[in-house]
Amino acid sequence: MKKLNIFLIISLCLFGFYSCDDDSNRITLNENDFVAPVFTQEVTQGFEITEDTDLTEVIGSWSWTKSEFGVQSPSRYEIEVDTLESFETFKVFTATAGTSIELTYRELNNAAMMFVKESREIKLYFRLRTSLGTAGADPVFISDTKSVAFTCLYILPLPTELYMTGADFGGWNWDAEGAVKLIPVNGVAGAFWTINYFTGGNGFKWSPDRDWGTAFGKQDISIGFTNDGDGNAVVPADGLYMVYIDMAEKKIAIEPAKVYGIGDAFGGWSEGQYPFTVTDGKATITTTAANNVRMYAASSIATSDWWTREFNIFNGKIEYRGTGGDQAAVPVAAGAVVTLDFKTGTGTIQ
Image 1 (cartoon, rainbow, N blue to C red):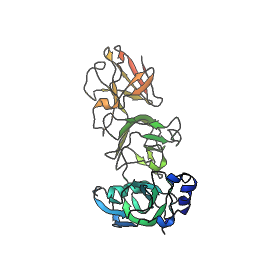
Image 2: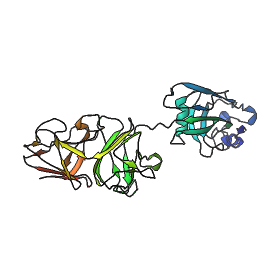
Image 3: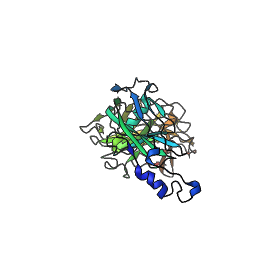
Image 4: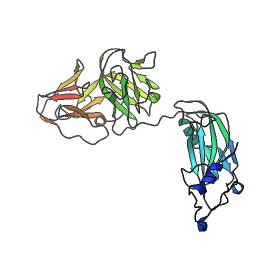
């Protein structure tokens, strides 16, 4: 049913939304002056949005007749959306001063994403809310309800951060000290990596926002690990592993850690030529010349140059280049032993 907010109309004069004390500015609103808009929907039902759908294609429209209040005041229209016909959890889908909106697949899919985080059949309810003036004003009119039923496509935006928790990493608490923030791969959107010590059979998961609603334990291509009965990722044996996740390509590789030195302190600038030795969860290498230390981590699915996964030791701590520029030079003598402990995030050069 269409609803006219009589209380609001009375309160406009009582509480000064429009001045009623000054006769020169008196504005009188009453129910007889109001002409409600008629809300119309023309949208195809029962469609499915897939990865092959052209999201820019128009699937339908909403339109409504102009509301009239009998006063000189702009009308503001908002479309509200909810998965409940009672609108107990509604969100504002869009707002406009116009009287029509064309709808694309993308816009309806985005509306679904306000409520769900998976591809699924969904029924959304929409209604038109009309008010006087600007945003935040109480509604003078709320229309009858329209609905659209379809199958939405969950589109995970490429994250700018990625986190890991599990039995070994914060005890399944995203906010615990032991939870891991992965390092972004320099220049590769949606790609992250970390090296850490894992216990075989102990589960763990990742999330872009430290939330179980977005947590995952695999991608379309998952290399070097399996999943337990709860969908958690598990490695087959204890050890130091390199985790590389490419969200754009939907790939995860977890492999025994491969760490390399590069540059004149090790003998040259060829990739993959100067490996660290991994023993008891720590990685070590000895320099062969006096020069600057540079180091990086490798993965079989990484597609970018070595420096995009670079790190170094500063004041006893491993610091990662991430998305930044060249790190400060770290000069060493020939014969220096470089030791890395990724579990504690510390390192030494002796």
